[in-house]
Amino acid sequence: MEFVKKLSEILVEKEKSWLEFLTEVVGLGLLLGYFCYGFFYKQFMIHEAKLLLFYLYLFYVLIFLPIRILYFKNAASFKLSLMFALLLRFFYNIINWGRKDKELKIFENEKEKISFLFFVIRLIFIPAMLNFFVEYLILLVDYISLPTFSLSLLITKNYFFVFLSAIYVVTDTFIFSFGYIVEDKKFNNSIKSVDKTVLGWIAALACYFPFILLTIKLLPMYAMTPELAVENTFFISERITTILFVLILIMYFANLSSTISLGAKCSNLTNRGIVTRGAFKIVRHPAYSSKIISWWLLTLPFMSMKVFIAMIAWTIIYILRAYTEEKHLEKDSDYLKYRKKTKWLFVPYLI
Image (cartoon, rainbow, N blue to C red):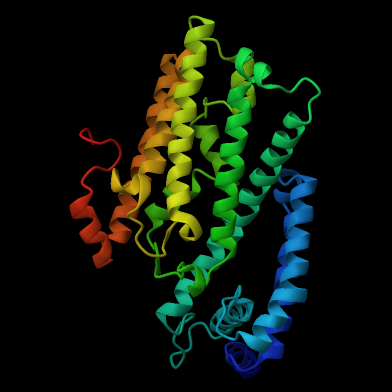
């Protein structure tokens, strides 16, 4: 079993470029296979999103990775060699469990722990973000390709809501996908720290696939998708319904403005440097407040006690997300300075 330990040590040696290339190619290939054919993702990811993942994989292993290894050794990678090393260490510790002279130790330092946690975050969020990006991009292209598509159609049929909502989702998920895929000093988005609290992870993952499937069984999500909203939402009158859609769109693009402000720093459960520009000058959690307000507006036409209770629960989840992020980020002195200047959490002069 000492062979396992020795192999794990070899895998973390940076000068072993050929081994790094091999682990990246094999490791990402296995992950690609899982996202295409594995449990949950086989049905969840649409065919076009799987194709995009495949093309990204080819670009990474055939173009980016060789150039990185040959010319830019300090450029970021997915660190699959480290992940394999951690896996081997884990098995080595399990095999030697209970021996007095063996200490149960997976991570050699804090940097390895942060790299592992961010790798897990990438595994969860990259396929989800890319899937929604491709799905809504197809919707947007199909919509523009309609023979009846025109400005007058957008105005008279409230289809402007679906059209602009699709633009919002495509842009938002593209920026987030880029943030999860790319970590590099050139983009000033290197990981400084990752939230290590159980509550922080539960609150965040409860809002995203695949974990949201369990959440919505307990707490139904009544806020409809944009295309369903246009077909099913009617509130008092056509004019009031249109005003409602406009207000929701304002919230969508307030959310998008916060995503644009984050740029390449976009990712959940991480600190990649404090952002103070754009909407973050006004409130500390503009994405959460705008998202929750848009959901309340979407459910307004069919509000009932059951819907109201569910929306209260979802609001609490996002308050928990903000709370856990505050606890994580307050360890950064830059965030403490920012918090003194920007006092409001969600809504100016209110909370």
